[in-house]
Amino acid sequence: MRALVIALAVLTLSPALARAAGETSIFYYPWWGTPQRDGKYLHWNKNERLPPQDLASTFYPSRGPYSSRDWKVLSQHMSEIARAGVDEVVSSWWGLGSPEADRLPTVMRAAWKHRLDVAVHLEPYEKWQRTRAIVEADFEYLRELGVGRVYVYYPFDGLIADTAWLELSAQFPSIELYAQTSDAARAAAAGFDGVYTYDVYAVRGGAFAGLCARARSAGIACAPSVGPGYNASRATSDHRVRGRRAGETYDGMWRAGIAAQPDRITITSYNEWHEGTQIEPARRRGPTVYGAYESYEGAYGLTGRSAERAYLVRTAYWTKTYRVAAAVTRALRQVAAFLSG
Image (cartoon, helix red, strand yellow):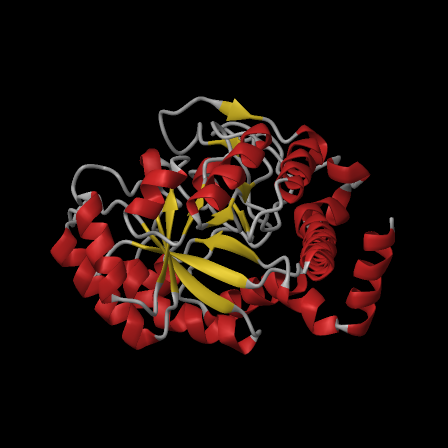
């Protein structure tokens, strides 16, 4: 009790401590397109869907199908993310020459306008084959662009050896590397600075404590990923579903994430509509000839227009809660170190 009182006093006297603790990141997808902006639909038409009525998503965005090249849309996205208390946008990256790479500078300008940091999510490169040489060129470009953190999805895919990741880490010391893996010891040996999970279907909150304990033992950071649910059935052949349960799934992952005392929490996702992990506003849409869409109706007891933004509002609650909890944890550790010294 005495240590807790001291910790709370430290927080009261040091607001900078609270601001520095409990940072969050959110995965962001700049790959959407419309005929008006891009000459054709991009991604909304995946799996032979027929936009604008038939989308490759089990939810229908409140904005309707949009283009990630639209500055107004980008600004609205970043404003919503900032108001939700998130610190960092992690933009999907598919290699130099990809649409996502071409759009990254604009995403960064929009994010910086709202005082958000920007990282990238290094995807597995379906068309470009993610080799060591290609990743090295990517890192050189990203470093010049001002990107300081890279999340590597599926890093141990066999195309890049662990020793090559270690070499890249040493070659680009200004870039923090996070590996999407539960094997923290392997990630540390391969030169990664941290681990994250991304997958909110297979990786449940019960795995977070063990992951972060292993990461601490390995001397690297832990950034478990929380998300509201999963349903990719309209966009892919994957028919696995993790229901949102009116917000209970999201809340449960946040509680588990905070309890694991991570170094940061990552959120899957702002707008990955294909997999149904998004927290971007979605609206009700009645049954169509293409089938019915899900909605956020009833989430946290909200209905109608209020329900469309339910997950953004809830994210703001959890980022604030996490920030306070992380600051208290940090203060307690400092107090314990002081008392033991």
